[in-house]
Length: 187
Image (cartoon, rainbow, N blue to C red; front, side):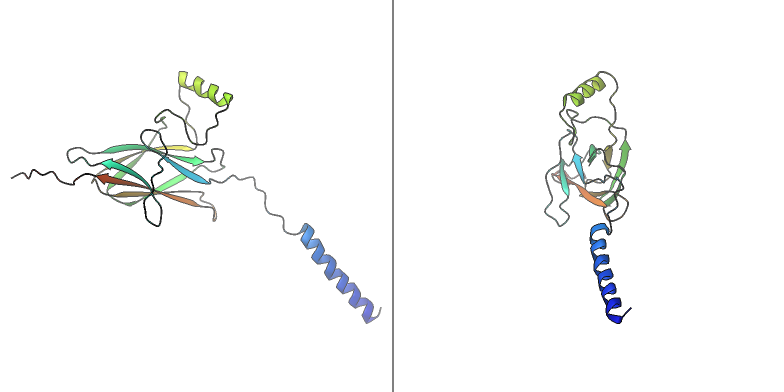
């Protein structure tokens, strides 16, 4: 073989290798995992919290009336969407404020409809049958009770998708309206 023949064989081998890599190259992994894409916060009435704070994090905001005489407890829910995600685990951190957070068993809030539920006849009949007897707990809904030790601005961060870079994080903020003290000063 001459140098010219060897050079042509090498050039064709490189050319076909590039073509083969383009066609049959790295195939993305198809693990079948469905990741959580969003979190929806439901207030005590079962309605989605849509009011946002004007900060960088764009916290969802719930406004409560300050009560100097009583301890305030508030029940809310966090819904992870889509409901058929592979890993529906969630965790939280109390970022600011003085409060205790308690995880509760599922209970329907408001009219009991959840974001992401389909309005198909099968879903309606299954929810009607579950209302007659026991209420089945959806796996993607987490119910919490927060009790405020001090009625100050309180922020909680929730996060999900603990594997890799697909981790999502969202914030819920509790804001109090009303004066901190009454006009009557005890002597």
